[in-house]
Image (cartoon, rainbow, N blue to C red):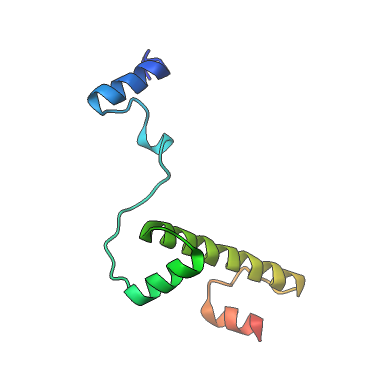
Length: 97
């Protein structure tokens, strides 16, 4: 931080609105996206997940899908199935027979 202490950096941020810390150290990498969303599906998923906002709903839905994938892979590994080709939809369907 070029000789700036953490308290000084925070004070500078509060006064001038500029952080001395790289943004990558503060926030996870994200990209703002503009997409069309089915309002009925959003409301249904929001109700199922109990999330208060659209952003929280999307984040929670992504977490659920990633967790589902991890559980599926664990079950397939228990069956002795090679999961390295699971990105291929035909291989995924064949694995579940």
